Amino acid sequence: MNARAQTYMWVAQRASAAVLALCVVVHLATMIYAIRGGLSAAEILARTRGNVAWLAFYAVFVLAVAVHAPIGLRPVLGEWLRWRDASRDGFLAALAILLTVFGMRAVLGVFL
Amino acid sequence: MIGHTGTWAALVHRVSGILLVLFLPGHFIALGSALEGADHFDSFLVWTQQPLVKFAEWGIVLSLAAHLGGGLRVMALEFLPWRDWQKGLAAAAAAAAIAVSLAFALAL
Picture: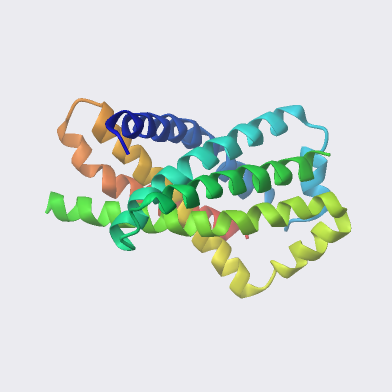
């Protein structure tokens, strides 16, 4: 991978991290608030169904994760599993797509 | 000692990140089950009431909080001019992560 691509990945990783920092704080606070007294589908869906603000928030959250996780995993695969050839980037691209598709499906699942 | 702390902080950041990547597909599939109706979703939520699942949930919340704290530490080190207080960031991140996970455990 050339230096330019590595720079783009570094920027994407830090930019997604900044978005995720905010998302994770909101997510943790919501979770701790929501689980008091137990969780039920009705309670979760009452909060999220038809709520465009939550839809937008979680869509951004999912997209930031889909960028952040594969880039973060890349050096781990290289250093710990010695997986450094081109197939590693193919795997990571597939992971990004998987996280986007399943993540958006989850977001729609609690919105629709 | 500071180098040692940094090594531990990097290891925790890495391991928590791996755990989160492994957890996320399952998390998304579970939430996506709401598409098949609230009953489907509720049957999954009943499954999560088991003590071992709750313990795993606590572990993943701790991982999320630790990864957040560790990530904020990395960005503070990279983007802010170096100050002596930054030596305490790893401890602050650990303390915040444990506090968040305890708040979650108490609410469970």
